Amino acid sequence: MDDTAPIIAVSMWGEAMSERAPRIVGARAYFEATEAAGGAPMGVVPLKRSLRTLYDLADGVLLTGGGDVDPVHYDEKPIPQLGPVDPERDYAELMLARWALEDDKPTLAICRGAQVLNVACGGSLYQDLPSQLPGGLNHNESRDRGIRGLATHQLDVAPQTRLARAIGGESLPANTHHHQAVKDLGEGLTITGRAEDGVIEAIEHESASWVIGIQCHPEMMYHEHKWAAQLFTAFLDEVRYHAQRPAPQPLPAIRRVGS
Image (tube, rainbow, N blue to C red):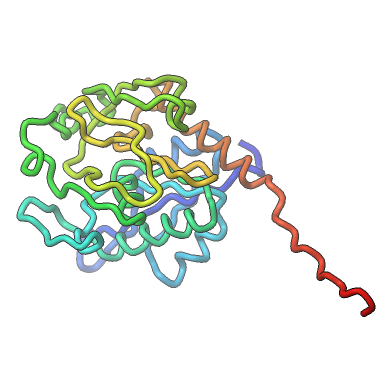
């Protein structure tokens, strides 16, 4: 990786290790997968005063996985099966998603990140798949079996989509450890992949730029699964292309005849 590697804003979150030493953390796999694809990952802290400054430094955005999104953001009341929520993280990642869409900045949204992307566009989520969609797949199977990168089901990808072009196919083996998922699709988004039980597991935005959300965790699979490495490579390729585009030049003022 050279000094011109594009900067990728990787969302981080707060973690209360103790009352005396709360921490801001980020999962290492996202940073390693980004670097392996040729990017320079930059952790973005969920602090309001720093958020925009860090976002502006970045050429692309990576929204990471994690805990539940508060249903207040899609006008629902919490159900008993909802897990812990983090208002600070919700605010930071929703803003990152909205800014990236406004600025046409390439974005890869993973697991919770895909859910955040959907909510940022006005969509909603299943707060808990086992209770709200009983009879489906075990969407926590990779975690239950103790191997977070373990592929446990197929994800069918719609042809002629950015995701299909990125991975070079229309099906991929997916790991799975989540209990929330996209329900009502947000404005401007398209469904590009589903699990075998019909749960939405890939979305992309109809913007000019490259904006993909995927429910599984390619950052845990890229060492052993070619499609996962190709996804990060495609993301970084698009980031480079976007960063190299010339900025639009303002038109000169029109002079009136005789002036």
